[in-house]
Length: 352
Image (cartoon, rainbow, N blue to C red; front, side, top):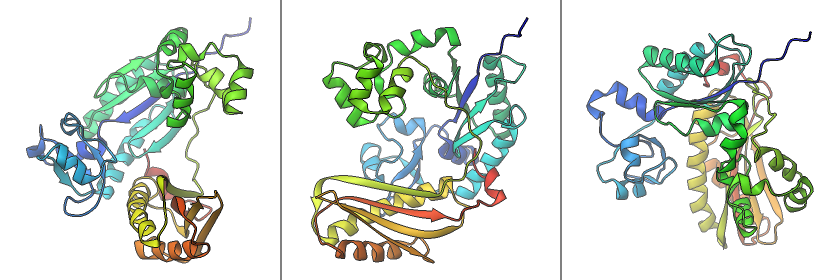
């Protein structure tokens, strides 16, 4: 008789306010106070993260620092210490490898684990992993456990901070039914508005549409939507795969008509890119930097140069070149870097 295969078991592990938690751990006098990490309070900048005491005031990650201080005047804003964060992430990664080799990092503080082959039940296993991390680092984490990445990721948000939630395979359909469609990966503001116009706000309501109807509405993504709204997700947990580039971009509500306006937006995008670069790809060799513009007639141009370091001045040089090619109003600016083909081995331990 053929042995029945064991169901997939995926854990989504998320460190709680990772950077801020490290700062509070290292400075006990900060305990119980609102703390943000990121852009300095005396210049333009954005918060990389903040703790839960700050979130009570409406402060959140990626918020401009001046706005965060308006909402929470007592907010303590600290500079990032990515060398410390990477060191802690390496310790946590070592703990995770005790339980599985199938680890897909999403950032320094977040990862998927495929524990299907582990002999232990996934719920208690997640509890054991979180407890081990706390004993070693004095940092708390939250976890979601499910039969796939989609459900595990959603489940990890339910009992934050310092908690976990498990959805067993037979519970998946019921779990998805009342969830907002925005919980599905791939659905952004535009897709959400489109679905609201169709009278769809929950995954259960989305299930009323056939595959062909969803394809007509969303193209190939409609095929994914048909499965995802039912809690079906076949994506594997994929260990580290070095990306070829890293970029950030913004589409503007009103077109930018002057180089000065573009330069002002470029500075904000540059700061976002540097934060992402320090967090996600700090050890990679950068071979090129680029600036991409999309104009009001939807034509595009990219100014790209090898041998330049990612400084604001170098990006401004490329912006001037790209803008000068047409002088048309700009509806989108993107900035980014391209990496060497092979990531150094040391990068493998720098991500959780």
